[in-house]
Amino acid sequence: MDATGLPFEEIKPLIGATVSAVKDVLLSGAHADGLMELLERRGVIVFPQADFSEEELIAFTRTLGDYAYDAADGSATRISIDPATSSNADFTRVSFFWHFDGYMNPVPIRGSIMVARVLSDEGGLTEFCNTYAAWDELPDERKRQIEGLKAVHAHAAAARALEPEPTHDRFLEWQTVKSSTLPLVWTHRSGRKSLVIGNTAAGIVGMDPLESMELLVWLRDWATQDRFRYSHAWTVGDMVMWDNTGTLHRVTPYAADSGRLMLRTKLAGEEPIV
Image (tube, rainbow, N blue to C red):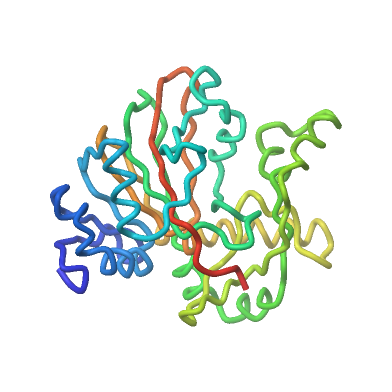
């Protein structure tokens, strides 16, 4: 227990914390500031068997900050790759690869909170890596190499991992999602720095395409190595919150017809990537 006022245990030295607290305590908002501070420090917070309803999940999200909802009615987002369940199933499938959310927004979302409703028999683990820690541990030579560089992030770059040879019409469809040019290193208002990489990175501005690809692959391998990575094996009712500004995440592949269903809410962003 520390400034959060809640008992927690570190999951790994450089990422993750498990918080034990009953619903009423979490929903009271009394520990909201402490939880957000812990989130920035640890990247991922696991609430085992929290078993929040959709209404409770939304209420908890509102205690932490501004609720950034996707649906017009303010409901939580249903995460599924089954076309029979989700109209965004194709878009969601790119989550099989390392990414962060909201690269196309002027201010990316602060964090996400997800509750497991139905699980797949195989696959479906959610993995996270701490991009603050990955920057901190980066060799000085690499730090000097990448500071000041920018990469173009686009949905087309992520989608090609699933569909390497799209038709031109399909590619143009992907291009309707806004792209962004972002620094490889995010200097946060706190003064801390994190890496801005992932499967949406199409290439580094001003660099030879193959050299750009090599650097992006190296950085991804560096940031996702075991010491920076946590893999969460879900139990129905688990709730997990992650810092979208300082982590990457992905889900391990699972069958579209497995029935796997998660509920997710998002916290509105607080600062642009600079």
